[in-house]
Length: 210
Image (cartoon, rainbow, N blue to C red; front, side):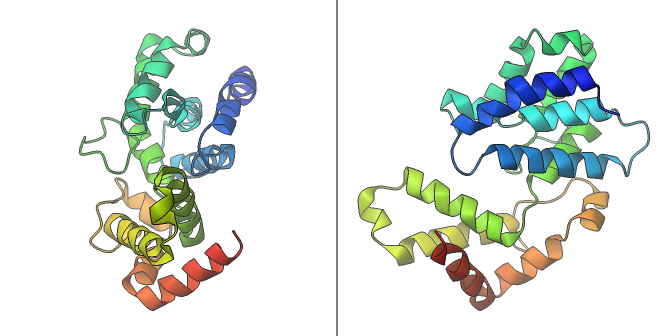
């Protein structure tokens, strides 16, 4: 059971921070990671849902610093500097939350130090293919030059290559927990990415409504 005062604090003061982030890291994304993290945590005994909830809620707040490359580190710093959060957790628990934020990135080569880090990392790396495409498309339109944005084929190729390299059968995005393979249908994503024609059909459907 999540502490009501903690939930109220995060709902009122932390989740609204996502309104100021990019279109690939909206408050809907934060809520989705929270929901998936809580569901995944139910597979384990002696898991503190308050810790899971806090890590999931704070995991991307470091993006507000403007340093996307190091946002996981900025999220860790944010947690350690949040004095209000310290009224809900012990120093040891604050460390678990802070490190969980740092270790959430699927591209990280760092081995997660706790099951809490694994839970949020796996939940964060799980989306329907349509959402993956949409988030990648938003990223491209925010970061690409005007000249590149005129080239629809270039954008498509970059997005497909990125998702294939990250979420394909040989991609670097791997679940840390075997339970994640039970809860999240990664094979479906892999099969779509393995068949470019199937991927392209979905891509065109997603982009057509932009």
